[in-house]
Image (cartoon, rainbow, N blue to C red; front, side, top):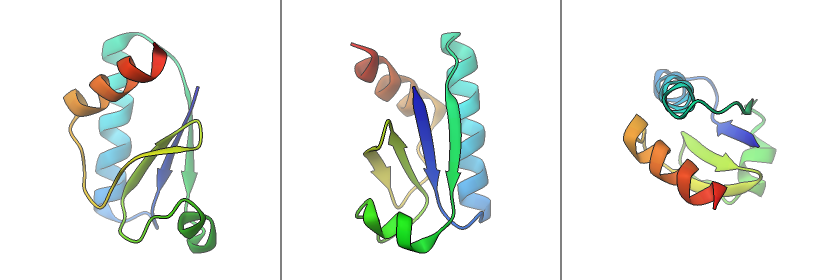
Length: 80
């Protein structure tokens, strides 16, 4: 599983990454975390507002920092 954090590295992007890492630890699963900072690549995902979260190239959230609990729900639904 590859998790993409899309954003230029602002405090919200860093908080989203922190929440992703906590969610992975809580679930006991490993994943590659890829930080996408190139604005062209971010736009390719259809993202107009960062931070954004994608899993295996599929956009799951954009424009807000989602909580660890929300990320856990997304990861659990993605695994099935």
